[in-house]
Amino acid sequence: MKNIIKKVLGIDKLEAQVQQAIQTKAQAEEDAQKALAEAEAAKEAARLAKMSPKEIATEKKEPWVAVLETHVNEQNPRNGFFELDWNEYFVLQLKVDGYYGETDEEIVDKWFSELCRNVGSEAGVNMDRRGSGYINVNNIGDGKSEVS
Image (cartoon, rainbow, N blue to C red):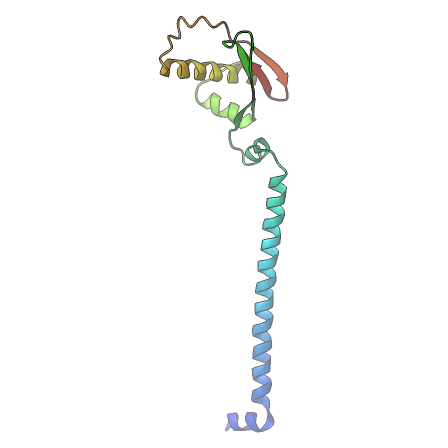
C-alpha cells in the first residue's frame, strides 16, 4: 500500500532523484579527492625535479657520494685527481662501517684510499710498489674535496 501511495503522489520518483543526487555527489567528491591527490603528486614531482640527486638523498636521509670531476695530468697520466661530493649520511655510514677521522674529509679520504687500493689490487696491481706518487686531499669546502 505504501508503494502505491508513493507512486500515485510521485514520491518514488523524488526518492530516486534524491538517491541519484547522493550518488552523483559521492562520485564528485571521490573525483575531487583523486584530482587533489594527482595535483599533489605532480607538485611533488616538480619539486623533486628541481633538486639535485644529493639534495634528494639528503632529504630521504640516505647516504650519497659522487665523483663530480676527474682530472688527468696531460704530461703524466699516472697523476690526476677526482673531485668528490657527499652528504652527511654517507659520512655517518662510513663511521658505522668503521672509518674514522677528525673531519668528514678525512673519513671520506680513508674510504676513497681504501677503495682505490682495492680496485688496484683486484686488477692485479701490486699496491705495495705502485710507484705512482701519493694521494693528496684538498678540502674545497661545502662537503667537497679534490683527491689527487
